[in-house]
Length: 367
Image (tube, helix red, strand yellow):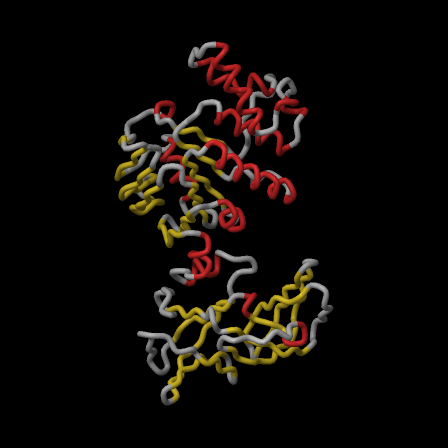
């Protein structure tokens, strides 16, 4: 069983603590993505699993074996780095087989493993080319092939696509997803790109400042963020997060933003706010609809507002509109075929079905 378990894992560099007692259980054959901004500790956590960084405290288990004092080569984990780390004087075949030769594996077994990996990664026609004769995507596939031939229990990917252009990143995401389907091994993948995290992961681990903020499936993280940080980090464009104050008016409650804008809070069980309570309102761009471009009838709770267009971001199939709504900055999403101009006044419909409210002080979700 190629499960990976981190129990109360700390990492210090001298007196500086950079990972603060994280706990994580990665199941056999699971694809888990660690995501977060630069400096959050995700790559450090991956390197501790690989054995490239010593842990300060806690335990790491791979396949039900504590590996705290086990050398990297004996942990049954293969790592794919951001910079490929290919030998420039060796062709693809030799790059992929080099580690197996060091282990003195029989030639026929090496041949079999390299050919199988090349078939999975569609590298059969490139086996006798040097790295400088390959594209960036092909070189990354060679690095992945070098890991595959080892047949490890766990694959560790450290931001493997960050050096590629946008088109290649999209292509390689599909290939990594297909690789997981074909090899059926445990994969732990590090990225700062939340789109990669959403498209690849069975579960996402969101990290910040050396702590794990939330663990869950992509849809769970997206729809039910545990706090304002997760809400703002996951999603493109990010969720609209605005400071607001609770107004209790009889049996109804509202969010007051700016001087005049009041947004009704749909009733939910076991939810009660204090009058004057300071909160953060969260609403995703897809829940803010430009009335002129969207005539759909909505069955859930809604609210109307007017806004002034500040910046227009046309993306082809859709357009992101940055707006001033009574002093609040909101991003709305509209059909890409409609033309909008800065300074234009638009009527908005706010779909409150997926309204989020976070405590202003702790930033934890309270609605």
